[in-house]
Length: 491
Image (cartoon, rainbow, N blue to C red; front, side, top):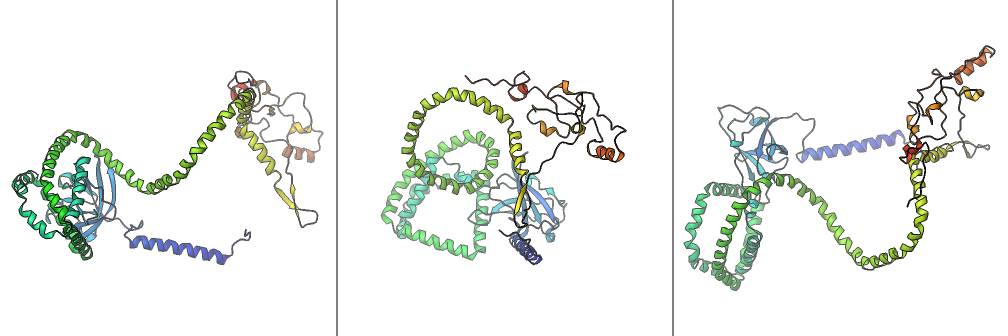
């Protein structure tokens, strides 16, 4: 262990290294789009969305495909149950018109979300800094998970199996697939019914097509992602075409599947109508639960390791638990014999526990009083000193006929009384609070000695703090009414 103080050069090196680390972290933070606490706050707008699970801070804010700002914060408005997003707009594009509309869009297939604003009217009123875009100007967004969540588990499982089997069935069967389309007469006859459903939900269909267009627009702006998408699609279709027999079986089973799907959708529609009020009530709770579920991502690896590591413990417990049971059964006679002894020891331990702070202070002070050292007689070794001091007060000089009013001697201190040193230590009983003052120094004492006695043995406040009696020890330690506690053996 190094006991020498660091030199100025070492301190300067450490300060320089710490400053360079801080500077590097600040540079990386700013390079990755982090906000600077000293940067001035720009023009900001607020908007509330009902579905903003994938919207995060530093998300893009776009107008006609051009980045005009960033999302600086995302929080939950507990009053409305909506997600409030604060957007900071670049100075080149401010202020924004009052009729500006906002909608959430997906940037990539991975679900990355950004905020799209409409250009608005260039000659109308403007939104002030920090204004809230009216809710009527916030377009609703339908997420893909909302569509899939409408299906019950059986339907979702059937859809998953269907998609997997399609991939197997269509492998190396491209030509057969083309022929199969000509034979899908039941499907063609029901197209009108499908289109009528889409016509009734034209608003949601328009939103879906618009969001799909935004996704493909994002793909076209990223050639690498588009190339990977096309390559993976080719591989998927090649694998599907290679399974002609499975494809034929799938096509034959497809009409029956459609019939079951139609019945399932009807039941699902009735179920959705019944559960819609419940879903509406659970929606605010689900929004609040989302951060907790995202936080579980950090805990999941540790839980997985715990379940893996608990395997050896489970195997060992097959032998350990019976052995522990035998051990506990064998201790019953011993505990029966210890019961009378413990019945007398436990009250003593409880009483000592009441004075645990005083006992700990006794040992701590005793240890601290011997830690002072000085050079030994030979000057080469250190020896410990015992630091002690005697009470200094007038009663040390001579005995008095009566107890002085400044006397606070108490051989039976109540627990915690030493914490009252500022206000004065209590005495055992009120009868120990006397009114006898400290005597004055007589004229027969030489002036020089009288000055020493006055300075050392007498205080500016001769009477000391107000005298008060402590509560009975029985009440303070064991809850009894006696002056002293009575320790009784446990039954």
